[in-house]
Length: 85
Image 1 (tube, rainbow, N blue to C red):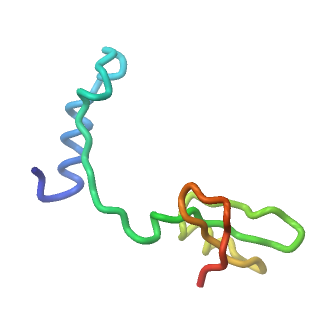
Image 2: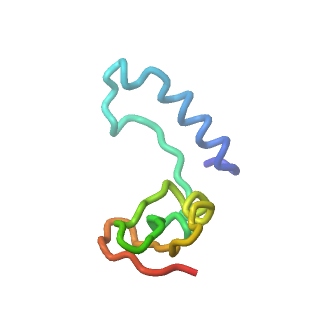
């Protein structure tokens, strides 16, 4: 068990170094886990009149590009975009 996410990720990266090249089965690899923040549970985008929603990699990128559009979000795996505040 690790106290910090960075330590866990670093340890996992070290343990998995060259694992793909060595064809180590995925079930034998090491992963660091963490709780997701609320904003990470959503896909983020911007809706402009007459255009499909433009999706962004995360909330901050979408907020930076809103301009005259509307900030929208959808639950991961959903097709329904809703306005976000």
